Amino acid sequence: MDNCVERVAHIGIIAGTAEGAALCYRTLCQEAEGVMGRRYAHPEVTLHSFSLHQYLDAIDQDDWTEVAALMSQSAAKLRQVGADIIICPNNTLHKAFGLVESPVPWVHIARPVVREIEANRWRRVGILGTQTVMEGSVYSEPLRQSNIDLIVPEQEDRSQIQHIIRNELIARVLTVKSALFVQKVITEMGLNGAEAVILACTELPLLMAGYQTAVPLLDSTRLLARAALHCRVQEERHSEGKYFVDRRVVIDAQKDTTCAGRI
Image (cartoon, rainbow, N blue to C red; front, side):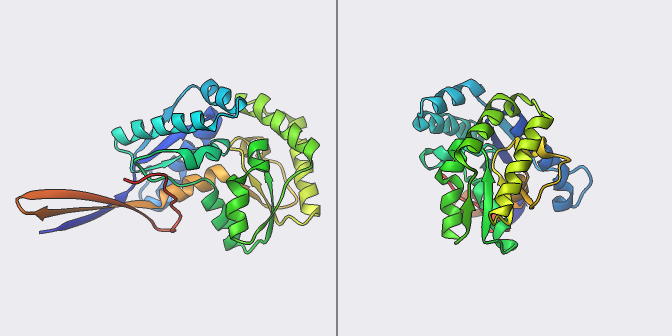
């Protein structure tokens, strides 16, 4: 007799920066109760991290093949310990997403953000993150496909935000001066027509906690974690001849999973 069981996915986290990965993990644990319906319940979570300097060295050399190789190695390790899906709470690393080889489906960090924008029927949004993210295709391409206009800060502001992220936020240096600067940039994007602003750096939510802004903020870290919580694994055990065969399919209740590789 065939048996089919659905369960919450074992989530694998590929860490870039410690602060972003920690915020993602905390969100998974704190918000899982509402999804799973039991106090203190959260899915099985496994995190793998290479030393951050390896990623930063590759990024500084514009070597995205090496970035993808590191991410692929992490994916393989997470598969070995049973991860069903993978998330990477680091926006910049997603520039290498198309080069990643993975035996496990991923939830791309931009997809839940775009879905949130669509749900609110916003047509014009701003973005804050590293220069790689603000100037690249990680968000601009999926937003373009959804006919959503993207506003980026001026060049001088982009350089300053890059400096804040790289030299302060990664090390959890959160200053009032930097928060006020980011607040100013958000206000300017609002005046230029942005209906919301994407925090496309996983540490920016920590910097802006407690600060009021002119427009709503889209926290890519928390939206990614929430999307992962809605993924389920459908397990089917059936007989073929004299043997029992186990099959798994990862399904996303919110139709949000983007895969790099296959199970």
